[in-house]
Image (cartoon, rainbow, N blue to C red; front, top):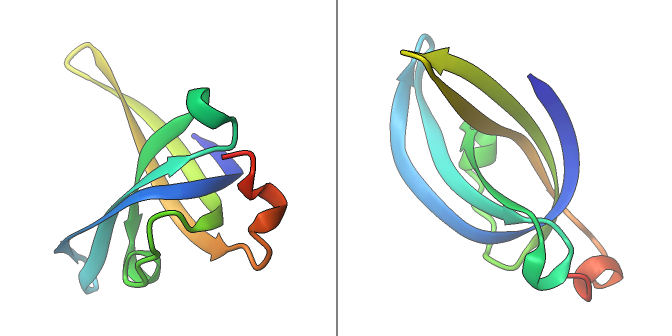
Length: 100
């Protein structure tokens, strides 16, 4: 797996049904993040769980995201999972806002 910390803008936040874990139920959300770079910026979809998923942020919010990329093989095909472990809203988004 690869851990990364990225500055990104939240393009979409979709709250998903809670999921069962070993310790009970936990929140889950699907988040679309876009990195700086204008029209051709990198973007990706990640899944947030627990406390992070339970605190939705508005679309357009600029954040620092702790992201982990996993890959695994199943029946000869490669799959990638992107999990978001933390989202910290920037206190001064105007510092990077013009790059989105």
